[in-house]
Image 1 (tube, one colour):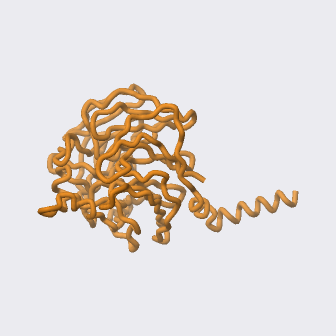
Image 2 (cartoon, rainbow, N blue to C red):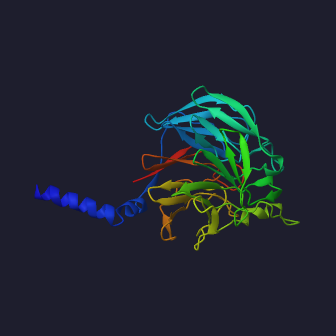
Image 3 (cartoon, rainbow, N blue to C red):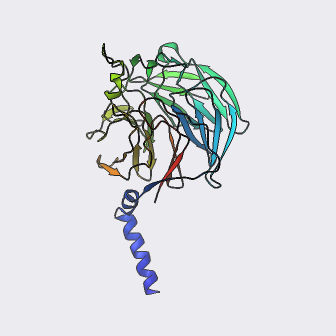
Length: 329
């Protein structure tokens, strides 16, 4: 009994004295061995709906691949009606929404003109409301907050021009758009995340950067600043400490009380494998265990205090990974 009491006191002490943070620092990445493999792809989305993970879109036209974390098996569903890439999908009620993205081939990929919706229950697609022409772009961060979908940043014309700091709100109930205050920094090729009534823009780059003899100069034009929108104050601010290893097309999630950013690409040949943790209370960054395979151009899912990431590219530019990794304790 005395031993049990000591154990309980130890657990309580750990929880109240930073034990959760310590556990996150001891998380490691592991590749999940699966019997089936999804369609390899990059510039796709990866979201959770009712305990299963949906791999959607990417360059080319692919089926929706669904991963069951209980059985560790993949199942292919129907293909998307058009090519959709460079987007962050969000789940609202029983629908997976795509409110901004690109279609077509590099480097002048066109922005989507309409919202697209995927219904997991019926494996069907629907073309939704028109996106205002002057606000169409891809590579933007998208989040759901209080029954509305927010879209920040993005680029207007593929990999050529028009990187923005636009900030918009889409109401899925009324199919209407609202233009909001611009973010402090322009960026594209990134994902956004919500934590404690705030939207965080982490990573990304200015893909509009080109030089006469170096069209791909944009790979090095990463954005280290972290911009944050306070929904309650309706104001933007930039955090004091920048992203230590700035990359574009990385993934970001909320895990416990921290934000975890990992992967991405820059002007190096291979995709990044760094895992970086932001303590939103102190603003401090910590480097965690690296990924098994560096990757960019995909999203991630948090499920039962673990992070799952699938697909993406293992090198700068195009690639078609089909593996899935998990970051857990």
